[in-house]
Length: 172
Image (cartoon, rainbow, N blue to C red):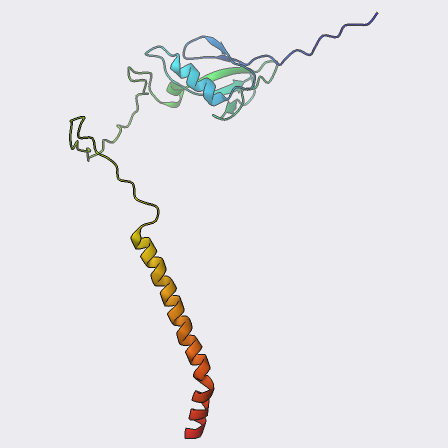
């Protein structure tokens, strides 16, 4: 009687313990940590701090931080994936605008673009510059002309060099 072998079990899907919401979120194998962080931050309720990044922690071990392009990996027995919240790092909490409150104010640009026309009929058309303009062609023609003139000057000088040397020799 042949023994039935079961197919190998797929690796467990990484489960991330969210410190800001208290929930455990599961992700597919091969999920980027940056995607997981953005998904966690999108599902936050107002007043909860943002997730900065994900790290794997184990009692008595140095935590392993996952960068935005790192793949989430479950390191096995004793290791747990958890979020690092921005309030631990000194940042703010989620606001109405989904922007973390910052300690330093955001600089406001001094120049505000002006509106030329508010009418729908008077929309401004962008005039695209042609790839090859008359000025460009003129510069190319001028460059070729200068090259040919310099070539002609050097050719004449080299053709008349023997007679110039004879003249100098006869004068001396």
